[in-house]
Image (cartoon, rainbow, N blue to C red):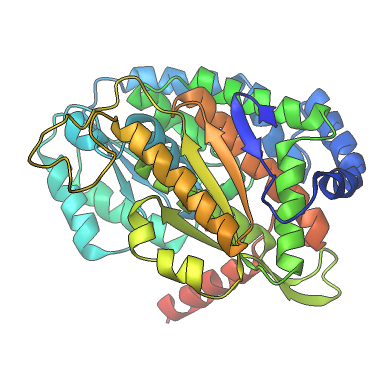
Length: 427
Ligand code: PA5
């Protein structure tokens, strides 16, 4: 199945295509509702994030602010969870894990947890820069870690320009305005883990120089393709995740055969973890204590750490094997007589070709062991593709909420740790 340039294969998912198609019919009322939301560009309900791929307002705002601050040589992103995982995932996927080393004049740092050494290191690293921008992102405007790090960094970097991204009407917005800082809005019904295509992700990504238009176009193409076709990857993945969980496979592993996709795996971990991991059903009436544990593996690195467990251990996992089509520029292993016999078959082949053999070898081993998996092949790691991938995973998670009969948009159990921390700190 192909959508927005991504190739999905569910042949070895443990569920037949007829069953996937039958189960997907259940989504028809939600799809109808969501299409209505998009047609009206309605931001008043939980499906609001699905408007973002076709929204021009935030793209304009973010680009204009990014242009204003384009002379800066460092951007410090202060935020946690849904307020930074998406941005860092897209940046890493598109620009690579060595982005900062390759771009010393336009570096991006992420300050999330209140870890003294990391925050002090960020402050040290940017203190020698000519112009620094701090973008504090907090939907609620009251997350302890974000506000603490923001205040520490602001005081360590008195000349830094500050931009605040938050819900319109939050106390953080009022404080920012009172201090004369520019603010960017997050629509109130767009939850943190669904917010990457809002100003949350668009400002920093535009500042770096990413093609945000292509990012949104990819998301839009995927969204529209999934909402127009009864058989689509988002519905299929939701059905597969649910059916595998019901069959006792309650661990879902993203096996990413591209190191630069690790951030995408971590972003998805929050998305699936917070959206489906619930104590109560949708109506808050029935205690369900349900969820799927998302894990992230990097291929082939983690075949050398958890491969033994996956192939030989308990049958409690459903895998999503994500790979990327090879590139012409992939470096080649040149034939050299002295080394040719060490690892047979690699001489004259490119690293992408070798990686492809490892991907297929992994899938073959999974089939032999009877481990169910879905495969996703990306054409490249460009903005359009990453936008499409993230959108498919968000849509799939929303549909999965329906199958688990839970609310995929709230996170009441996270709130409880936040409140308890605040209580302890206010003593
Ligand atoms: O998905 C969510 O809503 C949460 O994980 C939040 O993103 C996270 O807790 C950060 O919250 P805030 O953006 O309000 O600072």
